[in-house]
Structure formats: C-alpha cells, structure tokens
Image (cartoon, rainbow, N blue to C red; front, side, top):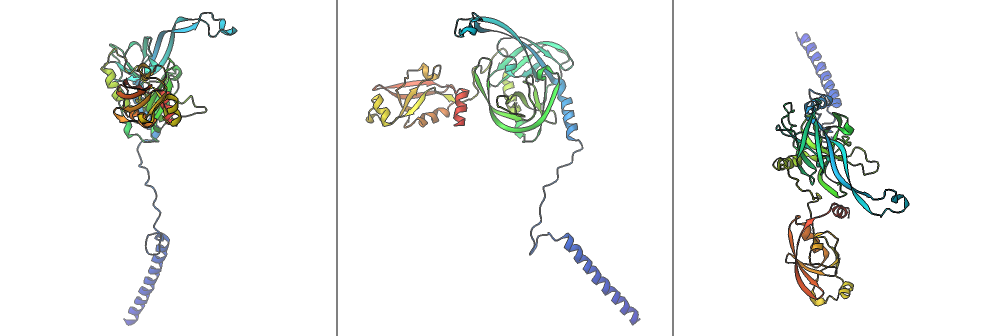
Length: 409
C-alpha cells in the first residue's frame, strides 16, 4: 500500500511540474504584451469596420435605381439680344471699336433637374433656365417629353423651379437628406444628363465643405456661391441641376459646377448643399412668377463702395486738414455704380465718424461695414473742404471679385 501510494504521489508531482512548465511557456508566448510591472502597454488596434450585409457596389446600384426615375432632362430655348459690329468686316481692319447694332438671337441649351414636389414642381439650377427662357421641355426617364414653364427663380442661390401641369405619370419626389451630417469620404453619386447623355451616373466621395466658388454668369457678372459642397464625383456640362445623392438615394446636394477654370484641376466638383436647397426651395415654391435675388452676388457682405487711405501728415497737408479736426480716414476713390457714388461724397473727404463711432483709421470703417448686411444704412460724419456734413448711405452687396481679393489678402 505504501509503495503504491508513494508511486502515485511521485507520478502526480511529476505531472504538476510538467503542467506548471507548460503554463509558463504558454504565458510567455501569449501574455507577454499585457500591461503590468516591467511590461509596456499592449498596442490597441482600431475597431474593425462593421460588416454590412450589402456591398458598397450593391448600395450604389440600389441608390441609383431609387432616384433615377425622378431625374429629368431640361431642353431649354433662350431668346435674347446681343451687340454685334454694324460692319462685320471692320474688325479685320482695326475697326474693332466701330459702331455696333443690337441683334436678336435664339439659343438651345440643356440641363438636369429632379422632381421636387408631387404637384409637378421640378428643381434645377437657375442658370439652366436663365432670363430670356421662352420654352422648356421636361424629358422624363421613360422618354416622355412634357411642356414645362419657369415657375420661380433665385439666381443669387442658383436655384429655380420648373412646373409641369397635369402629368399623370409624374415620378415620386426625391427624398432629402441632411447635409449637415455628412462626413468627408462618404459616397456621393451624381445623376443627370451631361452632354445630353441620358441618365448618366458618376460616383465619387464627399471631399470638402464650405467652399466659396466664383462663377461668371451670361451677363459677365461675377457671382460668388458660398458654403458649397465639394465632391470628387465628375460633374460635366448638362449635369447642372441634377441631384447629388448618398448611397441611400437621399439628396445631399444639387450639382452646380466644376473647377474647370483651375489649370489641371481634376475631380473637383461643387454642389449646393441639401439643407441650403431645402430652405431656398420652400421660398421658391411660394413665389410663383417671381425672380428673387436677381442682382445678388452671393457674398452677403455689406458694401460701401469707397477706397480709403490713412490720414497721415502728408495727406493732411495736401487736403488742408487741420490737426484740430481730429482723426479719420480719407476717401481716396469712389468706384462708379457703387453705393457711395450715389451719395454726397467726394475724394479728399474725411470720414470722422460712422454710426456715431469715432474713426481713426480705414479699418474702423471697414469693420463696421463688414458687420452689416446689404440694405442696411450707415451714417457718416464727414469733413469736406473745411465743412462738416452728415451723409447717409444704403449699403449694397460686396461684389464677388472684391470679396475674393480680401479673402486672398
């Protein structure tokens, strides 16, 4: 009995030793990186992406299928007038500044749009249906050509509504998403009619926010569109006015332009964010027959229309401004057609106060004006050739080129 017990104990002891040794080997190879005395903390990897039951490609295909029936092509006829040389041959013989004559013209253009409301309202860009639009034909995905008409327009926001009446097969309106919740890198799908290629789709990502994009309109005026959504989805002529949607087919923007003016620029397109579109479209839907913000440049910044200079000793001597008159900012130039050009203000005048605030430098005037919106009034206390006067000016909207120059500076 004692011999058997001793043998069993020996075998058990050997087994315990071997087991402990095996555990040590396992621990050294599997738990060497655990935090503890003398050990460095373990490396933490990013959490794995959630696995979805649907691939990216499948979601994009389904999103296109969902929105495509509601995307339309707009065939537009624009009538207008333009100035042409009275003698067309004079330009070849140095007569480029000769007399001109006004000539009527009619042009055809095309763009994209999408169903906004179930009563036949179609949303598009204002530049797709510019002033002078005389005919609009809405081409639906099923091939139907339905007459439409311009319902309302906001050139300052570059959005417009077109109306079709009594069309029984109108597709459902496009669902709006929330553009404030977008993240860089999300899928962005542009659907439209680039170069009149029906129902074309391009895919990219959301690549930037709050971009300022200057665009010259048909009249040669520069307009600035602020807060634009940037995307790498290719946007070509004819895509304008079409929807930019996410991978669920919800509207995240209205395609507007591409950075074609920048040499070598690729994959830089711009869209009006869906939240901006929603607010503007609500106003347009209540403004039948109206054009809103026709002269807006889009900057939204007050504009006085004066060039100002510092009132140093040299300037004081030139305009005979006495030291006893105090400080101020001297008017150096007044651009034509600006708000100040219509007021009793001249170069050489000194602005001493603006809205009852003392002026000691041009920045004092600039800062007050920048804080005001177009349409606000400013009161200027002005010294002019030895006399004081009060000048009241209604601010205009700062031109896009002036705004961009200041941003670059």
